Length: 279
Image 1 (tube, rainbow, N blue to C red):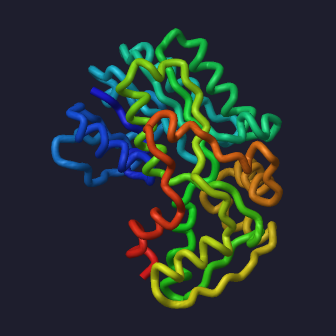
Image 2: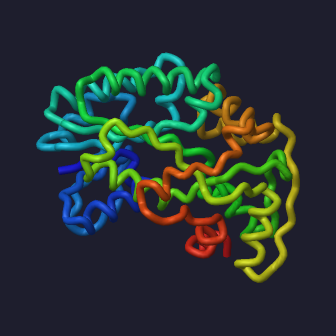
């Protein structure tokens, strides 16, 4: 049995599918009741209350750990989940961390994530750490405005980073959960190209076959929108990166191809698969 937290999200959903297609039994964990593929067990649990994970971990051999936004807030104790998993007999944890742990180690949310990585290394369990940069699926935040106004609003319109397709993250995670050769691996996950918000908007417009306007937000406007969903510290750390990425954050990592044996998917590919959200 493999437990997938965040199982209804942009990474967890394709990961659950990949594991079931590989013949694994999967327990999908999400905060609320949700539809899951046939044969998948679902457990509703809030990771800010780790004890609620106990039923999900019963009989599990591995855990994919994806933190909800509130587990990045000051005072959160995500390392308790590692202890709970170890006590429940889990042998392997694959942690979805962040590229910023290496590229911006002093950011408040990055310090906390580094501490979680360290706790995992020191646990005695088998482990692997995934450090993605920006997600292609962050563009879904624009879907409503594209549908209703034919417009995208985002900060730093001409500053790009190599956003990664969540489906690639999921495939790498599946490999790390299933293959012993990835134990102790730390993988930086990016897409194959640097792409700006304005260029992402153009890609969406091309896929729709209709124009989409771009409006540049100020940093304060962007932070106000982000803090509706994530702690202010995480919003600031993210905005620091997308405002002025450093050379390490602009680097195209070889790790997706190293694990999967193929190049990472470009943003256009993600758009083509998800264009219905923007119609």
